[in-house]
Image (cartoon, rainbow, N blue to C red; front, side, top):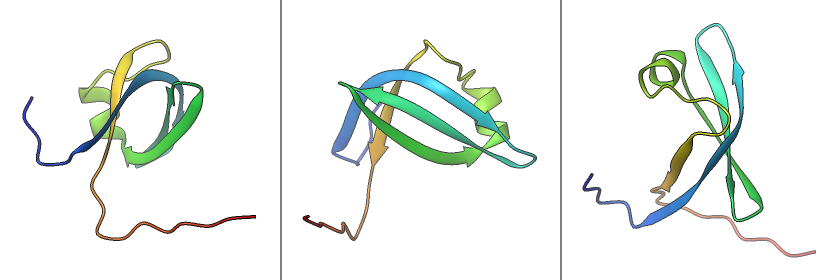
Amino acid sequence: MKLSARNQFAGTVTKVNEGAVNGIVTIDVNGTPVSATISMAAIRELELAPGKAALAIVKATSVTVGID
């Protein structure tokens, strides 16, 4: 798979919360949970389920940074 997005984080799906149209998929990336809202059609097409290897791919024009 070739992608223009350079921020690719390999991990394992830990949770899939299904909704009517969209779902929230959580991927564990080295102990850090990364969540994304995607369509239920995509969840089914990719066969996403806990334990499955997946990539969290981030392509953003803006990133917010904060501190305590």
